[in-house]
Structure formats: C-alpha cells, structure tokens
Image (cartoon, rainbow, N blue to C red):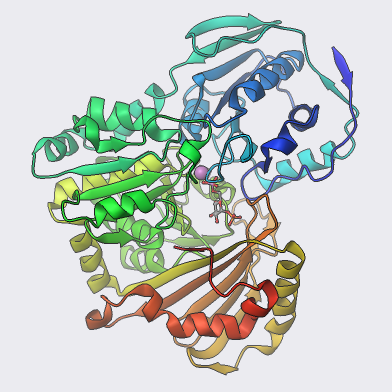
Length: 541
Ligand code: VG1
Ligand code: CO
C-alpha cells in the first residue's frame, strides 16, 4: 500500500546515524519517512537480503516490525533479523559480510540513555558491513526533505523470538542466532586455548560489565561458554530496554561501578565494559584505567602476539582527536598511519582498500579489518590474548609501552547539554581567531598549528570539512575543540587535551594534573566558562 506523508525537518544523520529522543521517533510516520527515504536512495535492492537488529532498547521491537513491513513493500527478498530483535553493531557488521547481504539497518542510539524518556536511533550499513558514507547519508537526508509517500504492507507482527523463517508479504524473514556468527569470527582471530588457560588458571580473574546493554549475550557465549570463565565474570549481562536506568557509556564517569570494583582491595586482574550497542570498550587493570588512545597503541604494538595479526599490520588509522600514541607505534613498525575525521565511517575505505589493519578512536572504539565497525568484545579478547601471552599485568604492559614510546598524556573534557546557540557561537569565535594564533606564546608553548580539520579520503578523494578546531604547540601539546554529532539535547562541547611526556620519572603523574596548564590554556582560548556558564566538565575521560 502507498501511504501519503509529509516531510519532518531535521532527519539528518550525524556522526553515527539518526539519533533523536524516543518521543520524536514515536511520532506517526517519523520512522517510516526515514526508512522509506533510505530505500528510495538505495539502488537495485529488489530481491536482495537486508540485515536488521538493534541494541534492545525501548522501541526496538516496534521499530523492527515497521522496518520489516517497509522492506517487504519495497521489494527486498529476505531480511535476517537477530533473535529477540538483538544484534550488536559489530555482530550486524559480521552478519552483513558473512551472508553477503545488500546492507543492514541497526536500531541503536549507542551510548545514549534509553527508555521512554531516553534516545533512539537508526543507522544504515552498506554491503561492506560498514557505516554508510556521507554521500549516502546526505542523499537520504535530502530525500527526507521531499518525501510524500511511503510503501508498506498490512501484515501481522513477526515473532522475533522464534528462530526460523516466515513470510512477510513476498519477503522471507529469517530469525537468526545474533551471537554465533560473531563468536565464530572471534575464534578465528584469537588464541582461545591460551585465553581459556589464563581464565581457568585460578590465578587470574576478570570482570566484564555489559552495562545492561547488548553485549551481555555475546559476553556469556564467549567468556563463559567458550572460554570457561566463571559465571560471575560477566555482570549486568541482561539487556534491558532502559539499560537499568543507566547510561551505557563505558568511561570512568558512567562505568563507575566497574571502576569501583577494579579499585577495591579484592579487585580482579582485568576489567572491561562495553556500550549500548557493543562497539565501544573500556579496559581497566587493577587500580589502573587504560585510556582508549593508549589502548589502540598497545594493541598495535602487541598485534604480532595474536594469531589473527601475527603476519603484521598493513597500516593503522586513528580519528583526528585521538592521541598520537599509535602514530609512534606505526613509526617504529614502519607502517602508514592515517588521521581521519571522527566517526567509524571514515575508516571504511582504508579498510576496504587494504591500507590499514587496525584503527581506533579516543572515544573507546577500537577495531580491525575483521568487520567494518568498532568492536567492543574484540578489543577485550585482544587484551586477554596479549595478557595470556605476556603473563604480566595490564598496568605493567602500559607502563612498559610508555617507557618505550613515551607517554601521550590525554584527556577529554565534555560539556554536555549546553545551550546550542552558545556552543556554536563559541566555536565560531574560535574559528575566526585561528588565523591569528600561529606564533603566539602560551604557557604550554608557541602555537604552531591552528586549523579547522579537513580530510581528503585517500581512496575516493572525497573531502570532508569542519571536523574540529586543532591548536598545536611547539611543545608537542595539542588542544582540539569539537561539537558532538551524536547528542540529542542542546549541544555537547568536547575539548580534547594531549601532551607528550618523554620523562619516565613523570609517567606516573595523574593526567588532570599533568594537563593542568593545557586545561587553563583551553579556557584562555575559548572562554568556556563565560560562554556556557559551566565551571566544570560534565564528563572527564
Ligand atoms: C561520538 C564519538 C565518536 C564515535 C561516535 C559514535 O561522536 O566522539 O568517536 O564514533 O560517538 O560512537 P560525537 O560526534 O558525539 O563526538 V557510538 O558507540 O555512539 O556509535
Ligand atoms: Co556504540
């Protein structure tokens, strides 16, 4: 059937898909408009296979039923949907690739809170398993602005809990095991035997916090069933529609429960957490938090110890605000290192072209060419494999890394939910001031670089501008200012701070202390307090 509709303003995907409050998504025709706009833009999809799943948050199931009806009316041949409507983002990527699907729709707002008062989201991944490139998301957005009809069918809801195949109109709907494909892939990359011995040795304990989000079932299957970890090793492992009322963002602020456990007297040896849709990871040793930028560098430096990467890395990439720790490793390995805009979609071409093997972001995303998304469980297994081979603690591995490469002291200060106009004004002012900055002295050094980051994709030549304001100093320190593209309320200002410390004697200094001058310089440059009324960041990572 053809249903008449009119456009909604603002259906423009951000850093990772379209994210809005549940209330916005529940408006009649809102989801339909976006999905139909996507299908209108996709060419030659008739008769092909689509993968659909989500992170299990509130509105997941009704949204999937809507997508199924629209997919049937738009001529897809088959939809693979995760049992219970569940598919983590990396698992969806793995299924798209292994089943050679046309693409996939992932229903998630990732680390944003869920529940009726929380957020919802939808993102499209292409046939390579990776997030749609900007050219496609922009085309979808343009289509949402002129849409006047969508196609759907009358059909009863599909039972998403029952495995097997049913028909929706002329389209087959196959309810698949959401975990198996991804778990099998993990077993091809890591030394499960060595990790099993480590976890079963009795001398090593781990705590994986699924934060009531999608990775619970994945962690149960891999850590407990396949690797023999005690059941208590996975906590908050049942996905809940509102993530237990929490904020499924694995950082020291929102994963406070994990941090407390890892700093307790009887702390386990290894702690980890993942986010709403399972693509982020947080790594914690006993009384020691590993920053995501360091984690990426450590994995790159130790990749030769892991079966899936034993033959070496073709290259690495990091998002622009991520620290240069991985650059130092790439230089030592003699491999290329690419600097991309924030968001996983920018790694896709480099991975597809075989130019890089590992990549990551300071926001707790790490991944490789095994899929086309960041992968929380993969990062945890990578660490476990390295720990099993090296037989030393997390802290020892990181301190040893710093001794070899120096320490890139790093922190991100987020000012969440600030007034959008005030945040844009702050950025505009700073952008205008950039040309006058080079040569100017500050307490942290003389400015040597001041620009608005732009990226030319080395594979397809596409250009992306306006990706964050970078201010670099002759001391090697750097400040980046950027507005978030995933928030749904007001604006979130992110201030990324980085300082290189070669002196081993000073590697133990607390990051906030080591960055104090840089934090003051950021305030001096941007006037954050005056512009936002905030004297403290909401979140420090
Ligand atoms: C944030 C992170 C970015 C990440 C994106 C999606 O974007 O900074 O590195 O790729 O979230 O992650 P922004 O625009 O808010 O800074 V996820 O796990 O929310 O899909
Ligand atoms: Co996520």
